[in-house]
Image (cartoon, rainbow, N blue to C red):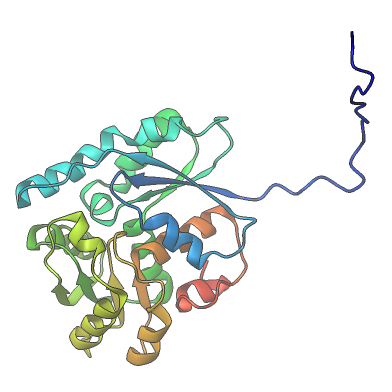
Length: 262
C-alpha cells in the first residue's frame, strides 16, 4: 500500500540575476607535485577565481641525464591533460606548472600541443610568466636561487639569457630528487636568498614549483629592496593577466600587487 506521507516538491524560480561567470585556470601539474595548488590558493584568496588541476606523469630522475630527459617527456602529456577538462570551452587559460620543463620545452611547442586538444586556449608556465614579469618590471639582470642540480639550473639560466636577460649571480641547493626539493624550508630559502643577492642584480628569481616561497616574498623584497619573482607567483600573475583579472593581490610581492603591471 502506497505511503500516505509522499514528498511534495515545489518548483521555484531564482529571484536574483544569474551568478556572473568567473575565470577558471586549468592547472597542469606534475604527478609528484603537491605544493603548487596549495601555494596558488594561498596567494589567490578570491574564491571567485577557480583553480582546477589535473596531473601529468613525471618520472623521478636517477641521474643528471635522466633529469633533463624526464622533462622532455612532458610534451607528450600536455594535449592529454587539456582533454581532461570538460566541457571543451570551459577553460580558456591553462598553466603548465613546471619551471625547468617550461625552460626545456619552448612556449611555442607547449602551445601547439595544447591546441591539439583545446584550440585557442592560452597557456602560461613559471618560465613564461617570469620572462614576461622581468619585461614588465623593467628588469634586465637577475640573481637566481634554485634547488636544482647544475645541469637543470643551466637549462633555466640559458632560457633566461636566450630571452634577452642576464643571470648575474646564481646559487643552488643542489637537490636531484623532488622529495629533497620539497623538503627545503621557506626559512632556508629566505636565508640563502639574502646571502647570495648581488648588488648588480635588479631582481631576485626563485624558480621551481616544488619550493614553498609564498610566505617569504614580501620579506625578501623588504630586505633586498628589489622585486622578487618566484615560480608560483609569476605563473599566477600571468594566469590572471590572461584571464583579464585586474584586482590587486597583496602580500606576495610587487608583481601581484599592482594591477597596472598586468
